[in-house]
Image (cartoon, rainbow, N blue to C red):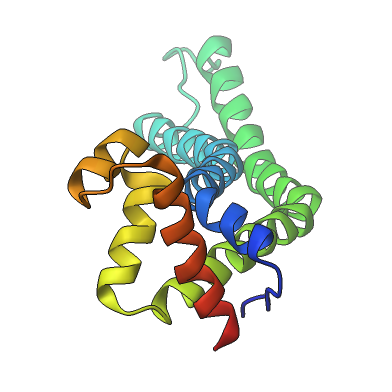
Length: 164
């Protein structure tokens, strides 16, 4: 899904922000997944520790060693609580995460849609001008002597795109 853009200023700004939007989406995904992965890793670690403790040990005289028994019980409790914490985290954060992700995905898809409508040379120029190269490097690459001509060329390409 993409948005329909009617104004040159809006299209220019969206294209200019494209790389930043991609980066922002990656940050959003990382911030959501990091606590989730941490809890899943902790759960795997607890399960691994439970495997090393076979059962509450006895001291050989018919009594139990309290230290190993309490550790075993705390690991069992953790093992039971962590899946609940994971579910709670997902329930509390998933709706907002998906809404934010959709916001960035639509904006990114909009830019990609308009870039895909361009021919290859125009697209390369727009990408170089708006986010790949500095203005000076772009002027050198495209043999443009005046920075105003650089902006005019970009605007003309985008205007033609909006007319299509």
